Length: 238
Image 1 (spheres, rainbow, N blue to C red):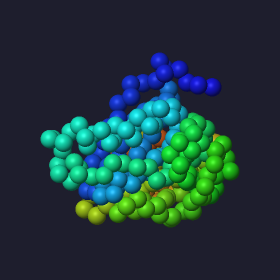
Image 2: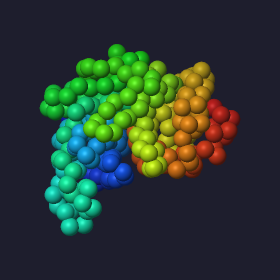
Image 3: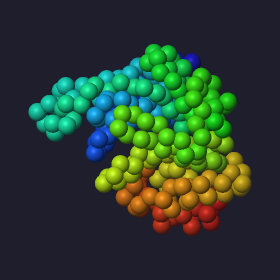
Image 4: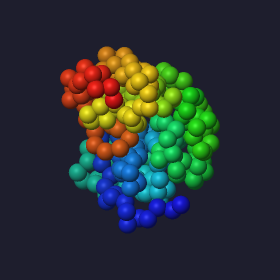
C-alpha cells in the first residue's frame, strides 16, 4: 500500500563527514526509519543501508549527497569538492523486519546493484538477497572497508555495520539492535540475553566511548553515553 507523503516527517538529510568517508542519513517513513548512505570520498562508491520505504526519497537522498558537492564548492574543503559523484554499488538490509525493506526490491532494480543481508535473516526478507553475509564479513567501497557484526536477538540475524577509519571515531550503524537508552525489542529472555551478550562482546568491549552509534530509527548516540547503563539494562531485562 503506498504511503501518504503528508504523513512523512520533513525530509532533512544530515551528513557526517570524516576522513575519507561520508555518512548521509534521513528519515524516510512515518515510523521514522532512517536510511543511510555510506560513501567513500575517493571513489564515490557507496552503500545504501535499509531501503525502508519511499523510493523517491531514497533516490533524493543520493541526489542531495551529490548536489552538496556541486552547490557548496566555495565552502567545502578541496577533498570534498573534488570527490566523484556518489554511485551506489550495493544495498544492505540490517534485519528482516518488514519496515526496513519495503523499498528494497524497487531500489535494487532501479540501481541495478546487489542486495546484502545476514545469512540468518535472508529468508525472512520479502525481497531478493543476492549475497548473504556471515558474522565478521567485510564489504568494500573504494578505499573504505565496512565490517559486519552479527547482533542476534532482535531478529535471528540482525547485523550492525562498522566503519572504523584510522585516526577517527568509529561509526556503527546498529539497525534496531541498539538505540539511545537500550537494546532493541526482543521476544524472549533468551533472545534478550543473546542480544546483550553480542552487544557487550562485539560493540562495547571493542570500541571506544567516542564511537558514534546510528540506529535504525531516531537520533544517534555514542558508546560513552550508553555504556554506564549496561548493568541497568541487564537488570530490567529489556
